[in-house]
Image (cartoon, rainbow, N blue to C red; front, side, top):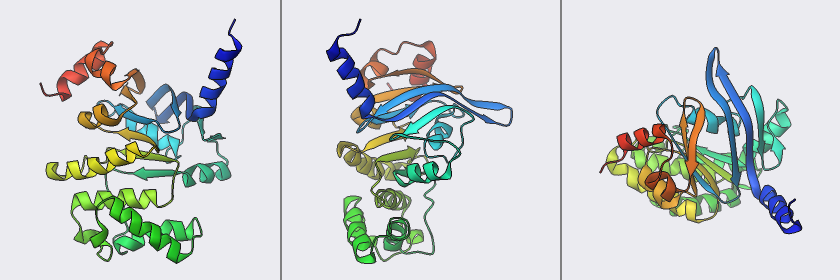
Length: 259
């Protein structure tokens, strides 16, 4: 029988959980892409998801903000269950920022306008407040001097940093990153990862799908390894890299880590 202290700790831990996923399944036609994913994330945690191409990792994080609909199981984000209720979906999406492989910027809008658009239209902020916060965010990601340019005038690394600033402008509780450096030239990867490291240290909840294992070692609280729509293994970075338990994990790490 649990003591009162243990019960209190369990309730406190549950209260801290900002994302709860239970037996999450997803099909694309007959392709069973997620096969019963269970995962809890506490407020302020940095979670890295890795795995081979086609393992379901990008699909999984897209279910968290309903860019993809799961067909079975339960996803609860900040106390709101994702169902077909549009009010719930919109409430969750307002609290989640997402950065994609491709930058998904508005090419016809200047950098500053890319950042202020959603706060003005969705949050209903006055323009001067939106611009003030946008200026601060552009400084934070290291491109304040680019404010009056168009996205096409920026390097790939600058565009991805702009995408991060745009996502942060909505002051989300959770940030999702879907392989944010995979479309970048090697010399631009570090400038984006540096921004993400700073962001991870700020206390925001982050879920990052990436193959950048140096980043994972540096900032992740936990690493989840996906394969064939399942979580094969998860652990702290130290245990994940030094003492992987599953043979599939060991094989994956041997292929992506340089010795």
